[in-house]
Length: 204
Image (tube, rainbow, N blue to C red; front, side, top):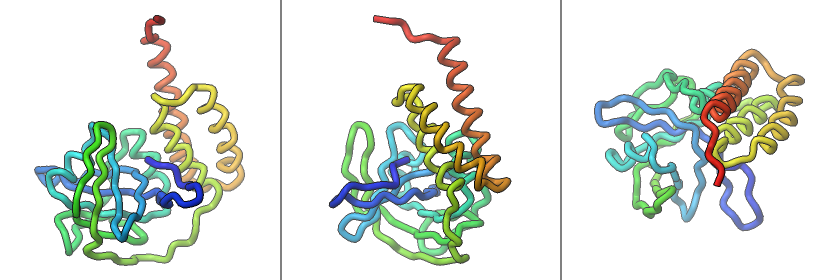
């Protein structure tokens, strides 16, 4: 996942849910930041990842927009079995409850040892329901999901500090979906901490 903010002159990264198909037609759901550049939509999955494999195989993906933040949290906590339905313009599926979706086809790829960049052309888009806007708890869950995606990169103190701040918005404005998603993320962090304690890294 990528950060939602940008400095002046940098492309805006939008937090989305990207759906792709495996070789057997199995849908894969992933939370991913997508940016626009020169009229193309850029998807940059990490190596290794199922999204990367599927994009290389099929050359197609669907970018989903949703206000159900459980899907972001679910993608980071092993809960990827969300209902999908086929789309029309490409080989792919969209989230059944997406507010909107964009069907894309890979135009070209820039290889990279860490994050190849797939530059995609829009083939079709559709709106399915009005976007009511995110409340503070929903934003907090998305930000916490980004933190969880980077647990291997960030100091524990930074994660704890940011989670403490984000928890304020969850406690004040969350509904049942947001509270469920938040707890998944809290449990994931706790599980990672337990694993680290049981398997300490050797000191140099």
